[in-house]
Length: 265
Figure 1 (cartoon, rainbow, N blue to C red):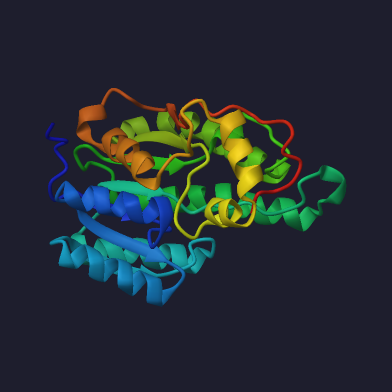
Figure 2: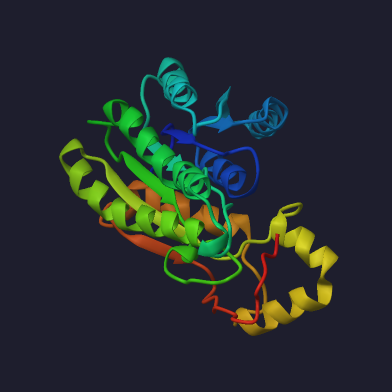
């Protein structure tokens, strides 16, 4: 299927590893022009090198998009290089905070909300003027099944931030319709990436990890970054033009596993 993405300009935050890098690879394979963003110049350079060697047109900009000035600089780098933005993938996010409310602080809440929600709002606000009027313009916000599936393994702050992101995506979709920009959410379940938290937990606690997978994953495994990336790319593409304001889980029918009473990473 031709996703009609050739030469589209795609800005992906947090795109040097994991789901972000897998998404950059998938868009590059469709012939898109890629704007990479990440906090580490070394990993950013390596990711850009890989994509260029595969034939992609790439611009990279080191930034921490939770900082307003860095977020603005990333958007300006995309516009300076390509004249505008067709697709924005807000992939930056993260957990943190105390797992239980009695152990949490105001700083825990502010920090996690800033990382998962506020910076996404900022990126959308900054990008919108450069997306308006571009055919097939689209925003994908990467949330999590934690936004509606409470588990003791993940903090309440993280779940609340992702729930807000999922809810507000539908609201933002209504606001962006007059600008010709679709907005959707893709919500991964537990994803196994070499070197990430789940991978480290698998290696350090193999018996408990195996039990967790057996009890919580009907398909017998965790998901992969590439499986999430494929959904992001299709949902962002003109082929999905009638999907707007929706939340799409990518979780293999993952089930809550109550005995998990500690963070896996």
